[in-house]
Length: 465
Ligand code: DGY
Image (cartoon, rainbow, N blue to C red; front, top):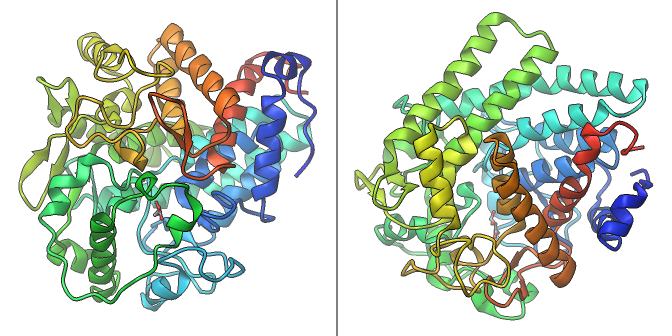
């Protein structure tokens, strides 16, 4: 990766935060892809890579494009982008369930050639948003970089189209506009109370003991999901393997089948990004209409999940046939999807600013906890049950800008920058004390820092030089 010379304003403004972010990404750089974190996550994770590409776009657009290219080289024939591409050189006993456990996925006729092995789950589709960011960043660079970026868009566009098509077909046979997940890992928000009720209904059968390597990498086990959650995660993996990683078989038999509103909203926003890419690469009108239709259907699906009392959007449990009532940041999904009515936008912003989220008086920084402190399942140190996450703050910031809420977006950006300058490049933070939790030197935390510090330069010619 090239060493970026940052504009003086960026260096002075945040005491070298951009330089530190660049160092974190270099340390985790594995050549054509980036480890999500040095020890806790030694492989390539799908949505981490998309956020990483957003950050890398400010350092080196060619390297950013390579990040997505490497991930999409392991796309399945169905269009699925796997949630993990396993690093064959990862140290033994560093991550479980690793390549050996998922090697079964390679037996599927839809899987890409292995090794490297992939999992057969997927994660939120941030990739088209990242690809567009690379194109935008290349706009401020020399002509060669722009030519390379347009060639990259031409190459990645059909793959992105296949990925989105997979999500709206295999993962939405009901044509509801909402994407179904069959494992909490697919949501990216693993142990969020969003999934508590649906998981409680999963009866864990005979299973051998398994290691918890993740706990070696945190100071306190309560920062990671509890054993009861892990038992269910691994039981669900066992059932997925038993179904031969076959989408239709899983849909028929699986005990955990949920419509995920945040993933669905990210897909709406990603479809809008894909439409912009389609324009740049001069895709056919038919394809553009198709993508536009997917975005529209997604918005309608989300509309049906709105809960007037909570002022949030709720996931839907297909097995139990009812919404999953939990106050978590995922409820702001319509904000991420964008183009909301003024009334709906006001309701979302009111909730975001309320004491249930970013307006809670005890917070160290006015940033929304992943789960509302007013929710029964709230836990301030446990992964997605309460800590604040820089990537979620990035998603909200980006969505607020798109909604024309520049003031609110800027408040989130400043607080998130203050949080990371004061407490480090952690995976997540205790919301009341600001204590850094989970992994340190987390790649996507560094990536969003770069975007926060440097995205203005995309609009101010000369700044990114
Ligand atoms: C983990 O291992 O914690 C991941 O979130 C699963 O993808």
